[in-house]
Length: 122
Image (cartoon, rainbow, N blue to C red; front, side):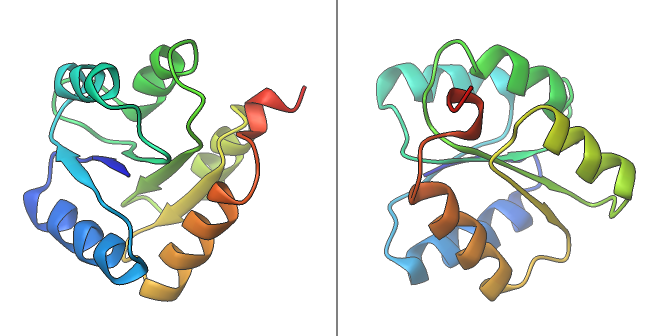
């Protein structure tokens, strides 16, 4: 699992949740390091924060789509229907609003890993 989040505390929490689920994970704080990580070792699933210091997750998603088949789950601090709708329109594989519960995280990850990435269905 690749966790892309510029908040070290959130990344640590998500990493702990991944550990509990039995998934190895790598944390990166920005888009440049995310692309390096994907090329070094393709992840099975990507957890992508919408708000990053160097760019936004929406832009990173558009750059990830051509280079990875991994399902992508958005996370955001802004629990709005607009963000959820945007993630769905982009064919993201999941969407979680902070604070993220262990059970919601587990459900989203297991669902994403249980099927091909949504954007590949078309």
